[in-house]
Image (cartoon, rainbow, N blue to C red):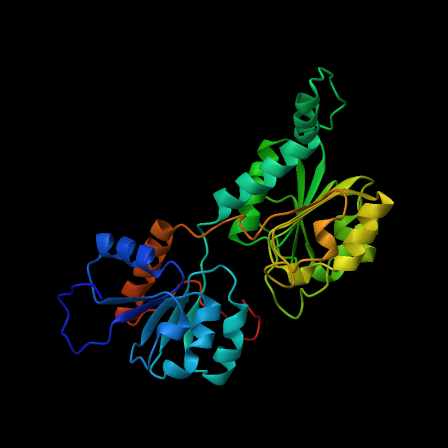
Length: 318
């Protein structure tokens, strides 16, 4: 536990995350305080903390030991595991992480697009063979990207896509207009929204309404040789439909960073499906420094009795 100028009987702010020590170190630099770093739920006894900065799975696993909680600040963008806790404890406030992932997601998404469209993997293979041969490429400029989910991350992706010369369509729950995106469809019109798209990028949260949205009908509506990239949640994708589209050649590639079950189990067909690229949920790892700044801003609001930023709505699921 860190040193603090607060009264010794004040419950500490609990940091419950695999990287708790690193997060507390960043918090101490910005605001020395009464923090308790715990890296796993099993290490925690009954705790009187009213505020917890933690990963959703850890918080849920330890929830019976956290009877005094008033506010949970997630260390992840996804907060779905905490929804059951919100329903059980309607007085609890849960806040998510927003506004710090845009650049990281864009780096991941457009890094993959560049690698695939400019044939960088093929050139690497040729290098191993000692071959000097130019290959036909598919530059991205002038192509069409559809972004599922146009919150802060989706808007950042749209801005970068425009700089790459792509036209961008967004899809959201309501279809309300969004600055910087030419057209936004409601999710109920998804097949129309994706018609003829060269790139389909999902940053959707995990909610009952988003489960299974990317199915055979949606994939069939894309342009021939389209690319699917999922950096949202694995539940949005129908696994078998993606595999069939890749094997049929209607998708030229799928880049998946999130999955219905994580870690992805050995023997899952994704591991061996041609032109399917698996990464282990690394598209945007939460930087401890940015997380500390976001949390302390919200902590100031909490202490002043002001509304918290990025509060999760239990009914919407995000």
